[in-house]
Amino acid sequence: LMPYVVRIRYNAQGLQAGEYKIPAKTSAMQAIKMLEKGKTLQRQITFAEGLSSVEIVEILNNAEAMTGEITEIPAEGSLLPESYAYTRDEDRQKLVERMQSHMQDAINDLWEGRVENLPFDTIEEAITLASIVEKETAIPSERPRVAGVFVNRLRKGMLLQTDPTVIYAITKGKEKFDRKLYYKDLKRDDPYNTYVYAGLPPGPIANPGRESLAAVLNPEEHDYLYFVADGTGGHVFAK
Image 1: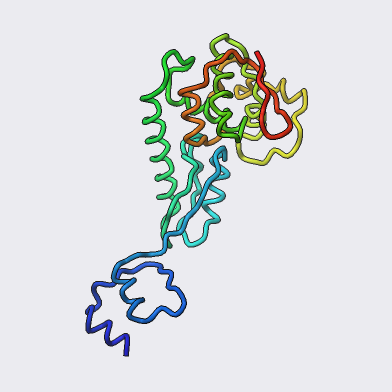
Image 2 (image 1 turned 60 degrees about the horizontal axis):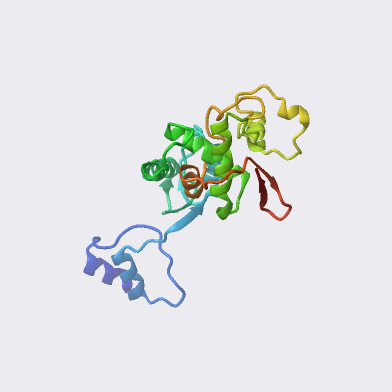
C-alpha cells in the first residue's frame, strides 16, 4: 500500500535521493518524511595533522562509500588536515580540492594577522616552517614555543638542525621511517637536511594543521635556541 501512497502523494517528485540512516521501528510515513526533508547521512573522515600528502591520499583511496581514485599526489603542505563531512558516492578528488581550498583560506586568514619582522617573507615559507613545528611536537601548547626556537635560530643564521627534515630527506614522505636516525643520516647531502643546509628546506615536509600555522606566524617571544624531549611527550627548552 505504501508505494502507492508515495506515488500518488509525490508523483515521483518531492523525495530527495541519497543515503539515509533510518532508525529501527521507524514507521513508513516517518521514513517518507525523512526523504522529503532530504536529511541525508553525513559521513566523516578525519586526517591527523602532520601527515604527508602520500599518507592522506592513501587514507582517501581507502575511504568507504566514495568514488574515483586519486592517482596524482598533491603538493606537500597544500592540504589542511582536519575532519571533513561527505556523502555517499562523493568524488575523492573533490574532497582533495576542498582540503586545498581550506588550506588556502586558513593560511590567507592567518597571514594577515602575522607579527612583524619574521625571518621569512612568503606564505610558502610559513607553511614549510609550520610543517616542521608540526612534526616536532604534538602538544598544542608547545607549538608557539617551538616555533619561537626556530624563529630565533633563523634570525641568528643558525642551522635549524631538526630531525624531521632529515627523515623527510630520506623518505620524501613516501614511506614510513621505522628506525633510529644515525650519525651518517645527519650528514646526508640533501637540501631538506637542516643539519647540512642553513635556512628553511625547499618546501614543506608534511601537511600542518591550523594551530601550527598560527604558531609560526605568531611565535612565542623568548631567548630559547634549544629544546630536547623530556621523556613524557613534551620538551625542555634552553638558551
